[in-house]
Image 1 (cartoon, one colour):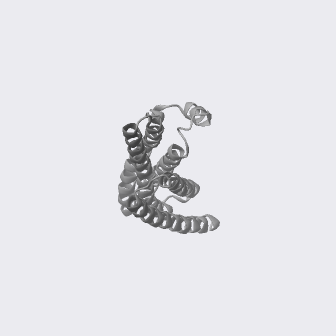
Image 2 (tube, one colour; image 1 turned 90 degrees about the horizontal axis):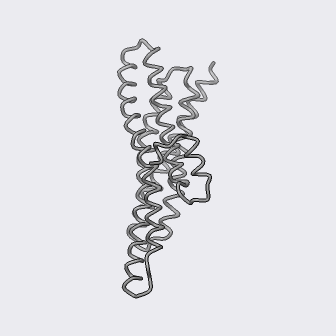
Image 3 (cartoon, rainbow, N blue to C red; image 1 turned 90 degrees about the vertical axis):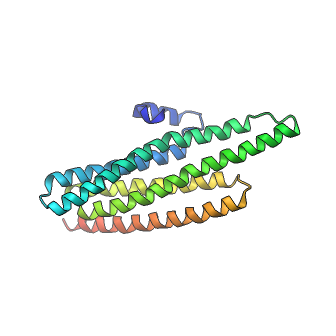
Length: 210
């Protein structure tokens, strides 16, 4: 499993001539890093801030960040596994009409599965950015840059997920599936991107107030 590999090994595999892991798995990794930074800011703030209300609020945020981190980490492998199914489908025999039909159906099914993974990543990014908004407002001032990088990681994961979804959707012939997922994808991308810009603006305002 990729998520259990040392960082150096993961980087070596990614840098190899193998097409997987690729951008999808790296996007999921970026999201997991963003959630991890959110958790760190929560923990430091809870330790240093005596305000009970803020401690209670950030404890709830922390629990959600950790759950998201687990989900993001799972998607590192799920994206690679989904892409491998696409490759396996293309390798199916196509000598007869029956084999060709079976192969085409397998390819379409694999591309749909490969689209579902980045769409799920987008949905989770929307949840994460909402938590980072709270973290950016309530987090300890000494961790503002960490919160900001967390936002950037989630934003990058969002954009990466969109690109991966689009490249897979381009190969799908089920127009209802394509249209529904394009609408969902565009909505999620817009929501995450707008929120990220607003949070970063506010974080930079707080940084410049030093």
